Each structure stands twice: as C-alpha cells, then as structure tokens.
Amino acid sequence: MNEPVVQSLLETDLYKFTMWQALLHSVPGIQAEYAFVCRNAPVFPLAELKAEVEAELDRLCGLAFSPEELDYLRSLRFIKSDFIDFLSVFRFQRRFVSVKAAGDQLEVVAKGPIVHVMGFEIFVLYIVNELYFRRLGDVQATLAAARRRLDEKIALVAHDAELVGKTKFSAFVFSDFGVRRRYSGAWHEEALRTLNACLPNNFSGTSDVYLAKKLGVTPIGTMAHEYLQAYQAMGVRLRDFQKAALEGWVQEYRGDLGIALTDVIGMDAFLRDFDLYFAKLFDGLRHDSGDPVIWGEKAIAHYQQLRINPRAKQLIFSDGLDIPRAIALYRHFKGRIRTAYGIGSNLTNDTPHKALNIVMKLIACNGQPVAKLSDSPGKTMCDDETFLRYLRQVFGHPAA
Image 1 (tube, rainbow, N blue to C red):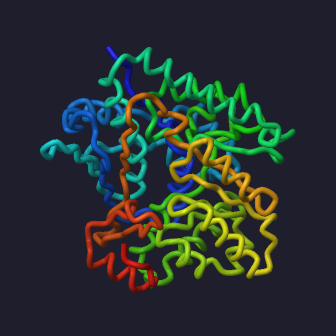
Image 2: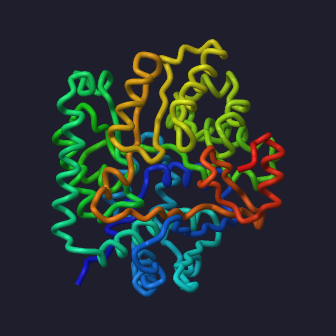
C-alpha cells in the first residue's frame, strides 16, 4: 500500500505562508473561491482519481502543525508571533473543498474564508500529480531516467567555471520551485539532496518549506498572483488595486521579502504603478509570463528611467524554465542586473512521462470575479468575460 502523499502541513510553498500572514492581518474575513484546471491532455482521465483525491484530502484535514514545525516557522524573521498562534490551532476544514467528476474532468473547488481555503492549492496540485504518476509505468525505470537527466543538468553547470563562481553572490544561482508538479515527494527530496551536494554555490534553496527544514537549505518565496488578485475585490478602486496590494505588502513586511510579482495584468501596466516609491522599497521583480528577455529589458529600462542603478536590484525568472534557458538568461543579463532563477517541473518532474500542466487559481473574492491578465495569453484564467473586458479597458491591456 502506498504511503500518504502529504507528509506535513509545512510541505507547501513558502509564499503560501507569507501571503497567508499578510491576508490574515489585513482581510481575515474575505471570502474566496479557487478552482482546479488541467491545461493539457493526461494519459487517462483525471476523473478516475476522484476517490483517491478525496481520501488524501480527508487525511490532509486531519493534520496539524507540530511544535517543532511551528518553532521552525517562528525562526523565520518575517513570520510574526500572532500568525504562529493562529497556525497552532489551524486545521483545514473538509467542508470548504469539494471534488467532483465531470465526465473525464476532475473538478476541485475550494470555497470559504480566504485564510481557510488559500492553503489548499499546493496540496491539491501535488496530490493529483503524485496519484497520477503512481499509475504510469515502471517506477524504478522512471527514476533511473530522472537521475540521468538530473546528472546532465548538474554537469551543464558544474563544468562551466563562469557559472560556478566562487560564492553564491558571483555564481549562476537557481532554486527549486517544483513542489506543485513534482513526480513524487520521494524523488523531490532526492533531487534536492543531489543538487545541494553537487552544486553548493549554485543551488540556493527551495520553495518547499518542509524540505527546506529537513535538508537545512533556505526557504524561498514572497508573493503569488492570488495576493494581488484579491485586492481587485477589496473595495479599492480597480485602477489602484496593484498599488494597494504593494503598499499592503510593504506595511506587513517592512523591507523583508522584497520581490514583487509583475504579471497579474501584464508588465506594462505593472510598471505604470511601480513608481519611484515602490522601486526603491522593493529589492526586485519576478517574471512569470511573456518573453523573459523583453521583460528583463523593460525592467532595466524602468530602473534607469527612475535613476536607480539596476545593479542594486534583482530579477527572478520563474516561467517554465529549464537549466539551459536559465543559463542563457544569466549570460544575457550578466553584469547589468543581479538575477536568480526558480525552476519547477524541469527539476522535480523531468521523466519520460509527459508532465501535467495543472493549476488551482483564485477565481473570485467576496462574490466578485478576479482575474490574471498574463503576458502569456494561455495563462489568463477567468470565466467572466465581462469582467475581463472591463479589466483590459481599465489597464489598457491588449486583447488576447
């Protein structure tokens, strides 16, 4: 019998905790709805996993943070004591998440107070992912192929003196962002142990808080789209939601966690709001859609226009990267601005099996639609065309 997929409530992305704390302090009562979507064609209908997903969610809702886990979170300087108090009594509520089979499709919806449902996202994604891959092929053969591919990635970096550097400050630096779409929890841990041992000056950490604690590496993350999207329904003028979200972040973290996400309504609209005030307060920007070179050049030009030295700032690239693409970006921007790279599925699910392209996104807050107008049209997620048209009009965002 297979062991449960979820090992700990810590086993989620760090930015879930950072956004959770910020929203708990600012809007604890806001109601939210998240919906699961698979964007590509699986080998077999995901609806077949319904009973197994239900059982895993039942177990998830019985888990609690241990004192040791809370102590670890408490050790992170940006996590506040009242948030730890909240987590000490927190339990996921099964009534807030539903699973249905709609033909071949698996429908998972989390709906309720945002501070109770936002955490479901990452767990649902890697539960579905791991249950799916357990059914495909010979596990040992799959892992053997994954190990060979990981060794090839390591060799690309380790054999290039320009990339290795003498310290993490002079090297090509990347981190693991792959918890949500990993092949399995066991392979995820093995891959990170290997990277940490073989590329100590290049591998900078992981978004997976559980594995960061277990392996003694740095947990990495700041904010995701849902944080900014929530502000579309918080009563501020829609045109001002990005500025309100960024200001809320500044007030919550007072200089910590200073990487801002730029593509909720596209880079151009973001930069119009990212004025001198925010550009000085935030350490840098994260790319998650659109052409990364064009995006990076726009960021550098924006800093220069504001008379800020780009070399004092950092760009984080995290959109569907692999090691060769990340290296190419590193060489393009080297010496002009600091860069780092968050690599997901290509580190944790590079096997002979085609990876699932699954997401679970915020689609409504307080009964109102919210949306992401990505710089990659396929990433836009909102079923309310009227709201999408209005959002495009307000921010001058081009139609897909």
